[in-house]
Image (cartoon, rainbow, N blue to C red):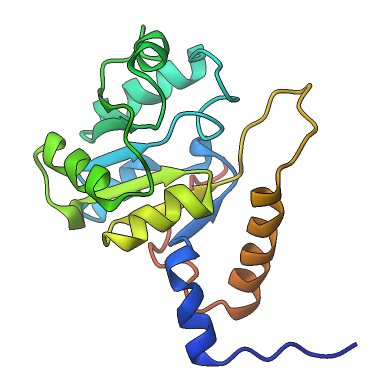
Length: 190
């Protein structure tokens, strides 16, 4: 088997696609640790980050937002979905939102930061797609976390983009250069 050699320039080319952290789910993250690291607001994608595509919020997601906000962090949903979809999703969640955002356009990320009334370096983005969520956040200099995408049990089709993401994640793991840029952010098992 031939070894794959990647130059520093080659790795840098992919840096806009590499997340600061890669975790199992939004429930793996210790949001109090993020607050201690100086973050004041979290921007979330909705579909396949928090719930399967098109699904309503769950009691667990509702409780997660309440605990994040109780910890002292602001929240905002940034989505390419319509306002009708977002309003249905936030029925039980008190959060800011920006719909029809045209991600990965950096302007929508910066608008989200402005809406929360904080600075870019105090903001963290959490999403499930490398080519949209992570790329957009990196392009405008916002720290980010990639989560494994959430699917409904009946979903089996994986698109071309998801297969390309597997390649990017393999490079991310092999190089190790851009990994764990946020430090310890995971919940401690008890």
